[in-house]
Image (cartoon, rainbow, N blue to C red; front, side):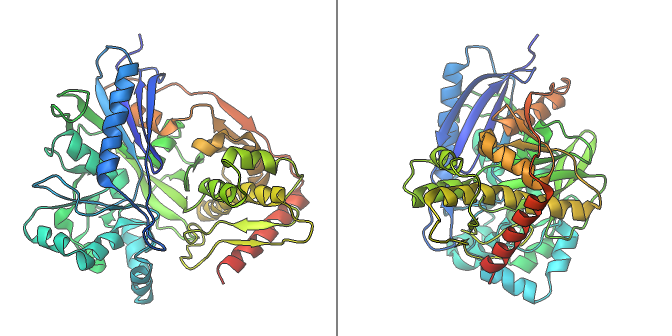
Length: 486
């Protein structure tokens, strides 16, 4: 028996994936549709909310054409987080481009709130330090700068939500306006102790809770598909929604503190469960991993703004076709030759949180060649993960175990070995590419009374760098970070 068939949607920054997954966790069929990001001004990052939805429709149509005629029993959604979508409930149309998680347009607004002493209050309620990453300041910016937003709010027609809410609205033809606790916890408007959106936080950011969705447990029955919205037809229940990083943690089978995962995507997220809700320090955020029948699972997280995207950026600088070519070039030299590349292309995220940081390349000499810069880029991705890994250990006060890796760049065996060397822990790279989709499908299956998905195979990378060499590399990187923040 393979059990129910779940259509898992993995709506990411660079593409939208749809997977048909059976009750054993095996992928029956998959489809992927690329997605464009626009950068209209320095520090701004946007996507078309309409294109996000049409990419979902296209991915569903394609995967259904490949997956046979058996019915779909439920839908599960994993999504890029912290992206704010604004739309008119009457027309169902977006009001403006979606401000994605990379958008830094509210940096000055956030700096002013921090200078006024509000950071501690916000961290105590949400676990998140004030930062443009999160939708709270973006919604406040929209209220002040987009007249139609305030006008629709006054009429009761404004809807403001993360991508999961936008997809759910469209799948149900506007019948359901909701989010799950994991996505809600990333808005910086959600009190994670009360499990409710906070009017006080909304007032602080110049926003409003009146336009926000209902926040529900991650394994809720969120609604049913409406006829004509996709190739699926009507009446299919949406049985799970989670932010993509949370879904990856769940997909790795991490259910108790001590395990830690890193997702290597456009940016990166490290997450580890905590036994209780924590008010964090050390540049790490507190968050809700998920809420299910067992209750609310809390976690610590560190978000890196530019991770694997750095490889594509460096490849373009070096005239290489793609990140794979960059990695191949990096492996032609034994090390970076003293070169460091800090990919602070949109400021620095965890654990440094410095919006004014800029990308820097240092340590070059007459002997520096393209291969050294390529190697420095691979090293930079791993060093950023190591920064968060070490900050998490400082936060919880005890060593973390092996690092579970997922995301596109986790398939780079060279990067995974460098990562193991820099954190001095084994790295377990998932041999399943779509771990977030499988995770949220597992959540949906659990909600339907099915057993937990079996563990999948991982490739193990064991650290082999000498202690003195690792310490020297980490010191050199720390110096480069200080330079980037000057």
